[in-house]
Amino acid sequence: MAVFFSVSMSLDGFIAPGSPGELMGRQWMELQQWVFRQRFFRESLKLGEGGEEGRENDIVRETFERTGVSVMGKRMFDAGEHAWPEEAPFHTPVFVVTHETRDPWKRPGGTTFHFVNDGIESALDQAREAAGDRDVRIAGGGATILEYLNAGLIDEFSIALSPVLFGSGIRLFEGVDAGRVALEPIRAEPTQRMTYLTYAVRER
Image (cartoon, rainbow, N blue to C red):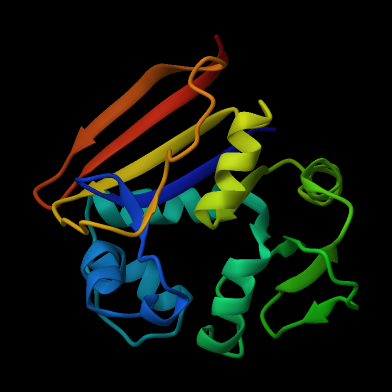
């Protein structure tokens, strides 16, 4: 079982706009447009028929199929709670790292949100237990990914590097403990639209 994250990133290093109000805005949509074009993604979110079927579609499907559980921060949950369809797109248990106490929130399609208020390691322990023989994905946002990375709890990660410039926003590696984290390249896959990079994480 691996603990991983997989994100789209702009060429200048950003994975999201700085303001939650811009989360579904033009820049974010430009960053994510490669995903929305894929048949597997469209079918998973019930966005209608059609979509592309190439290597990028395979990448989206492989990421989904390996994920037994997702872990996310409260900021990502708050933004998604109002933006996701009733049938949330995870179809697995989701553990939300938060400070609040809240009962599990069950959604149609197999997604149940569990709220963990005693830290990232507790959330990961519970996620591992629920993941079965699949992997744990740290879904986001950027601050939560960074917490897990700096704590030495990430085994590998993938970045879909998109030809988009943000100029400002949330940088993926802002505040990374570079003295502790070393990377080992696993794979680099260029497509016409983006470059998909996968790294194993090693302790420096």
